[in-house]
Image 1 (cartoon, rainbow, N blue to C red):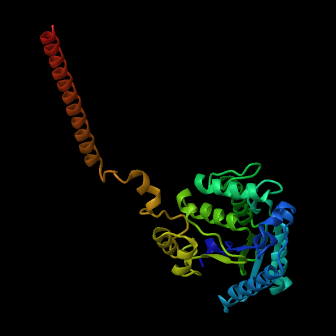
Image 2: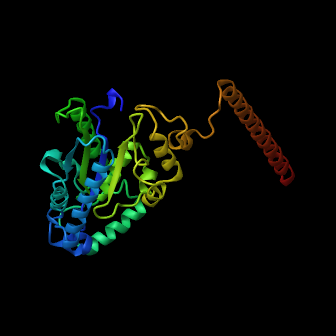
Image 3: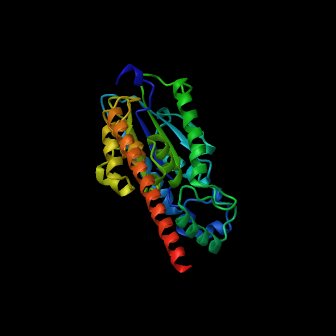
Length: 315
């Protein structure tokens, strides 16, 4: 790893909470505030298994460098806090350098107590309107979540730049973010600069599912280092998005992918390759417009002559 990457986390790992009472029965939201929804017994076991998978992933990736550490960020909701407690059973105290409860990575706000029938109708409206921009009455849209996740990312980078965690450069650092399904998708959207259309196609992660962004040799992060193409397809990534993840494996930090389809293709697919070609196309278009104007004038003149002739005959 280059000196510039010494203080960067080796991995940024997103973990969705385990199965909750609300996942099992949506009626729970009618009597219990969303932040107070608890994990089920199955959800507790899922979280423990996620902890074991995380430990195995981090500890076995580089046996020659056993000095690794973990820093956790967790949503303030009860189900994410409980998930983190169960995950923590797999780690010794010396491996964990810190934990921060972070309100900006909480679940999307759906309003206060949820009336089941009304919420069902509201979610049907969301499907027609679009998942990203639809704002729940008294709640949030995914776009609102995007704004606070963006703010969280800015703070995350400041913590790294200023070494607020007092990271030992000889330690391999891993960030684990225990959050929610939509929040995790929005996090990836913001990080990889995905479009709204690409976000709409993403599938929600399963309970206690782990999604790993790993640092490549060039200093960029990619999902394609730890995850297979088949996994990325199941998550809803398009072939272009998967190709971008593969490119990032060896890309240098800050490098721009010139042929990234969604940056140019959707807006400038008719763009000329050179200034001369552009001028030629503009001249051709201007000539066509002049011809259309002349044809319209000629047509109007003929119509006027016919009208005058008709009037003369009718009199």
